[in-house]
Each structure stands twice: as structure tokens, then as C-alpha cells.
Image (cartoon, rainbow, N blue to C red):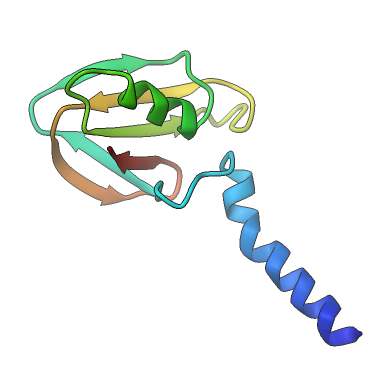
Length: 101
């Protein structure tokens, strides 16, 4: 019984970063993309990385997106979503999420 409880706690802790970040999907990762030649679109209205990804999917020419949650309300407040046609540089960033379509 004790082993099961420890395993359950360990599994909960392993999921904690994804939950804290707005339940990022497996396709998203903690990184930041910098566009190669400017942004297609930028928005401060979207809430969550999934919404940013959906905006990229619905935008002609969009191949990548990057999302930064606002620090004052990271789970429920809007963040900064950047849609790109081409990625120029990728950097690891624990605060941001990014993905390719």
C-alpha cells in the first residue's frame, strides 16, 4: 500500500509542471521561437498555448508559434502569442511554450 501511495505522489509531481503551465500538450515544449523574417501575427488576447496553436493552424502560412503566459495570471489571463512563417532561432525557455505545425 505504501509503495502505491509513493508512486501516486511521484506521478502527481511529474504532471505538476504541465498543469501549472496551462496543461501544455506533448507537441508543445518549453522554448521560445524567434522569427526569421518578422511575425505573421501577434496577439495579447489569447489564453493558453493551445489557443495560440489553434490560431497558427487557422492562419495561412503559419508554420510555428510561440506563447508567453502573463506572470500575473498565468492560468487564466491572456498571454502573448506570436505566429511565424519561418523560425530563425529556437531557445530553451522555461516560461514560454512553442511548437511547429
